[in-house]
Length: 172
Image 1 (cartoon, one colour):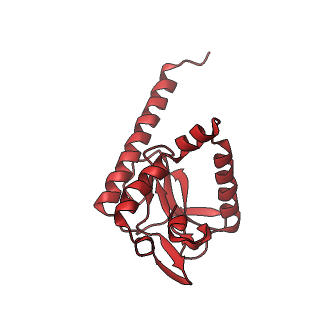
Image 2: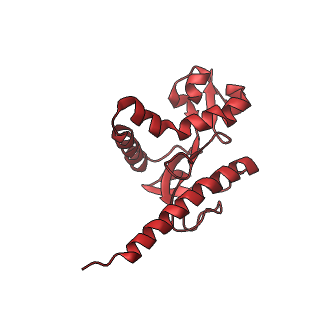
Image 3: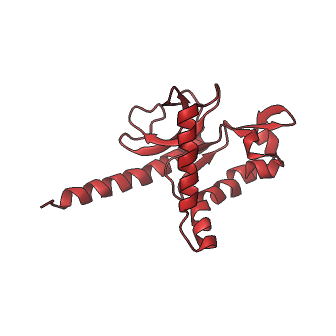
């Protein structure tokens, strides 16, 4: 969406972050995103020049994308998931470019952003030698923190429900 809004290819957009769950609470964070416009890297805010769109319609459209795909196709979004798996495997195999990162659902324990432990949560990661590492040291403003906390709360609820269900069933 950012690339389309700027009239450039998707390959010209780097360091876009999706935080949290793959659901309507996921948070597409543009604050660290760089956009290459006419050979020059600029912030997404400078490239798009519409803060209200970036903090409103952009976020809500990304959050509803999965449901929109299912509604439009009248089928599951399995091809989107398959494409994401292929992209992740390519990135694990080839690594990320120095100074660039991707978003990947990884184990949250020990993360530097205060996300609760024992979740699979989408973080910005860099990959080198086929090993991922959560990108540390990114500034998180109050707006982003609130969105990150909301998606984490949903994942905690899902985790706790699953654990409760597993604990209440006996294997015979």
